[in-house]
Image (cartoon, rainbow, N blue to C red):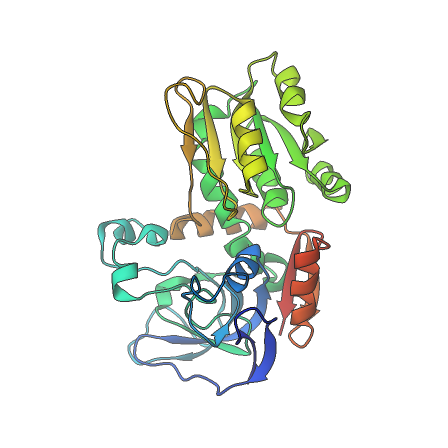
Length: 344
């Protein structure tokens, strides 16, 4: 079968032929229909050799959807032909957090060597992929897999981040989204669908600011030295109740800190390498910094329901598997509008 693999440190991913996998006991083979391209892929492919821990060759793709193709021995609750999305942050299934559907925070995954597809385990950018357990497939029903596959990360991650701040986002509140790209433009829609907050989008790219307005941002400003003051002006000098940083580099983290209000939430979602000082005099009183990771399995059901009602959607640019390396080139150049999806 064909697959897109990262094979050499520092080199671009390659389309190669590899054996078609067979499901073992308890596993499911998925005939992949769509796979999403993510900045996290670019992040791990940019790591130097001494920091890279994901194994080579690595079949990419932690956003996946497909049709159940073959069931391993003992698998129940699924049928061949079912359309499903892949819940990516796999856990052990037995620890306390996994028992609550919070497998993204599994207590045993690191010890047991459990890794997400495309981020250690073979991912979705292949004609077929193995799902380690049937619980990691969430029914898509009548949802189009191509248009919705990215919700498994680009929807689930902002949903999880925003849901933890819902008590802040009351009528009259202001929520800031830094970065209106793949995750950020979905985050704006989630904020509009679930809260009464005024939504402010910040980005360095005018086209992405235009997209932010299209999907529901009340205000869209360039992310520059004046942005914090503009947010302060919107809030009578108080600042934002919540800042969701989908970039996570030093300038955006400092910008978020400059515009948060007393008791506000600064939520670091992006995988940039910025850092912030924390102390009694470093931030407004009672404010918090959170760094959430991905989302709960139950939350993926909720995200797909939002899509089913039309409350959220993902702007997608479609590529074939053979053209998948070009999708990563456009991602690196910042030339994608929304999310790239590989169609198989």
